[in-house]
Amino acid sequence: MGTLFVVATPIGNLEDITFRAVRTLAEVDLITAEDTRQTKKLLIKYNLNTPMTAYHKFNIKAKTDYIVDLLSQGKNIALVSDSGTPTISDPGYELISGAVAQGHRVEVIPGPCAAITALVGSGLATDKFVFEGFLPKKPGKKNKRLTALKDEQGSVIIYESPYRVVKTLNSIKEIFGERQVAVCRELTKKFEEVIRGKLGEVLEKLKDRTIKGEIVVVVEGSEQATQRERRS
Ligand code: SAM
Image (cartoon, rainbow, N blue to C red; front, side):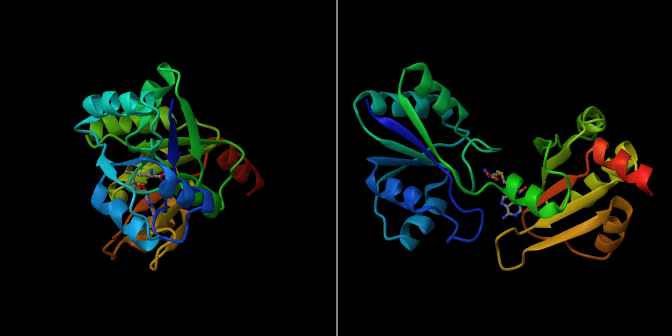
């Protein structure tokens, strides 16, 4: 039986990849990629010419069956997403659970993840945290999720688009009250930036700016907020 390798790839800086990840991508029979054009850039950088097939939200069922069948034939397959760790707000869960259900070996090759990179650089507590990923787009559902997150003790990690980030920060302030926050933009890339401060301060800093690029918002958890208030 073949092995499914789940391979983390860079979240911006193409040098952020492990030796083992590159070797695995070179050695497998097939790479299953969220977008083959995106992964091609990585393969070119590391002089790899392993065949690729697309695996994305529109062909999950058919492709899962196809890949699991290849594993049964003894092929070794690497699963990658466009950036970071597959399955973290990215496709791959169905393939991994399908492979596990059929008794195939699954090996994860760890590496970059925007959520962890942002949390560590945020300056907020890392001992407990909650990963929310993308909030719902519709205001009603979004506010419901934020209300559910309000009393989380640990730091809250949210993936957000640059077009919605100010609106989301305002909603967080309304629902959570004043908290420390870190808006982490373009991590590992040329225009990397982390804007830290109280929600009100960060909103003030963003007021007259056009915000571009990829963004992770890390919000102080209720426990740290309470301790900070007691100290002040
Ligand atoms: N699988 C990825 C991971 O491991 O982080 C996440 C993929 S998800 C589709 C893409 C979202 O992750 C972006 O919209 C942004 O919120 C966040 N993200 C990815 N790369 C980032 C970066 N370099 N800087 C800031 N946020 C990033």
